[in-house]
Structure formats: structure tokens, C-alpha cells
Length: 96
Image 1 (tube, rainbow, N blue to C red):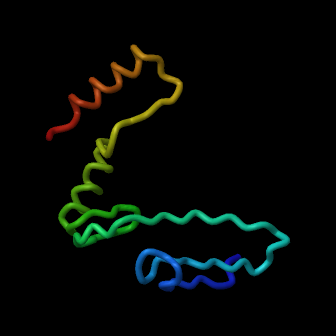
Image 2: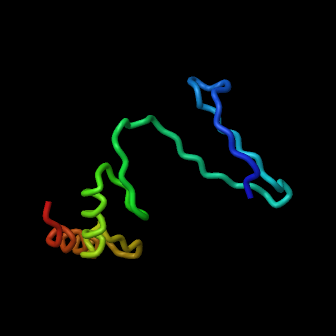
């Protein structure tokens, strides 16, 4: 359980560079996954797990997901020849 999160311009390169997480119970252990990056300066449209730049793109992503063409299928147990078959099958199902 995180007790507090604060964002502030401490010793980092610019305002807001520092993030402080405080654990409510340090005896139980504490893990955090923090992702940071440069601002892209583009609009954000989101619905559920889909995040795109426009509402139309989000709607298209849901349609693609429903049709089973949302990204490349991956089977970590597939050998090289089987993986190449998967790629060819996937490419034949997608219209770019």
C-alpha cells in the first residue's frame, strides 16, 4: 500500500523531475514500477485498455481487436518455420 506520492521539482533537471513514493508498511516490502519519458505533445484519446490520439483511432482499435487483427499473435513455443507461417497468415488477414 502506498501511503503517499508526491511530484516536485527537487534536484532533477527540471521542475517536476522528482517522484517520491512512501510505503505505508515497509516491513511488508515495497515494489514500484515507474515509467518516465519525454512529453510527446500529442492529443490522447482513451477507452478501457485502448490509448490512441483520436477517438476514431480508439474505435478502430476496438474493431481490429474484435476481428482478431490487433497486433501480431505470438506463440513463444513456435519454432522458426511455424513462426514464419504465423507471420504470413497474419499478414494475409490485415489490410494496411
